[in-house]
Amino acid sequence: MEQSNQTGEIVATLTAATIADKRTRLLQVTDSQTTMNSLSKWRQDHEDKGYILQKNAALTQTTIARFRARSAHTILKWVKGHGGHPGNEAADKLAGLGAAKLDSDQINLTIPAPYRLTGAKLQAMTQKLAYQAISARKNAKLEPRPRTTANMERISSGIQAAYGMQIRDDTIWKSLRSKHVSRQASQYMWMSIHDGYMLGDHWLRTNMSDELRRREICAICGERESMSHIVFECNARGQEIIWNLLRQTWALTGAEWKEPCWGTVFGAACAVFKTSEGRRRKALESLWCILCTEALHLIWKIRCERVIQNDGEEHTESEITNRYYSTLNSRLTLDRRTAVIARGRKALRPQEVARIWLPVLDKADELPLKWVGDSGVLVGIKRGR
Image (cartoon, rainbow, N blue to C red; front, side, top):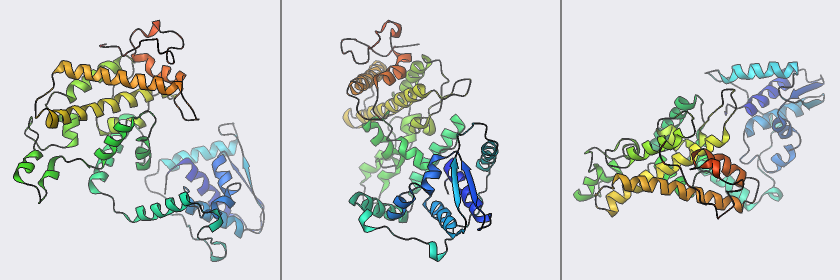
């Protein structure tokens, strides 16, 4: 069961409906609009669609069944969170204790037959919903790939070590689709997490010739090649230079540097930076995501050019440095152009682009007010410290 605030709210509602006398009028106070709507306003729609892809579906269905089994009325009342309501404040404390528990409680999700609804109404079904339901059912039968599981553990443990928080796997997968991660970088990261590239022991398959089997070993280091080796360990010119350049660029922000690892790099879109007062620094988090993912993808591209295109010949340090700054400048230009034609609630806005990129721009204090949308303004990443 997902360990989240919404889950805790629904479990509390279920518990109250279970232990209260069925003939007693029940008033439940909550600060979760989502929980209240799921049990009232959205109930009919969710039931018509069979709770397909709804989070906490079993928990929500059980809670509604307990409501229906009661003789007296059940009333849900919303209150503003952290507004001084004594019951709400006490509930927040209990929620904190529950989130810190290592062992989860056993919750009875049995629904009596008279209140058990199954399936979805045909009139509420759409092609999209049916496709999602079929895909979800098929995916539930798939066994997780061991290498994917190992890489996900690397990312989640790295995030916890760097930022002190636990991240669920689906949050990591969703972060790969962040608007601050380019499509090319996202595809590369997805393949890397799944260990989908022909690296290392992939070349040792039985149908491989002796010539192909020799590709298992890194020609520079003499060790088995893997994505970790390429991105963090290889002695070939590339990864170390790029990470040092990224460190110099990040120093311009004055924020704490996070050592590159699976968690901080492949989980860059999950980064959390806070002020001394504990407030999130959203623009800084977005900048870290952009810089890390672009640097990561550049390391991979340079490695492929060296091994495939250049037949093992290494790039020079000046070439790598120029490629690094060219990559960031190209990404800055792309963000500027995208922001000018921004459409939709989630689109990148000019003000957001300015907040994200300003700390690392050359001569940032001399830029005009609306430099993001002004194509006549030449702007680039500051080199060095």
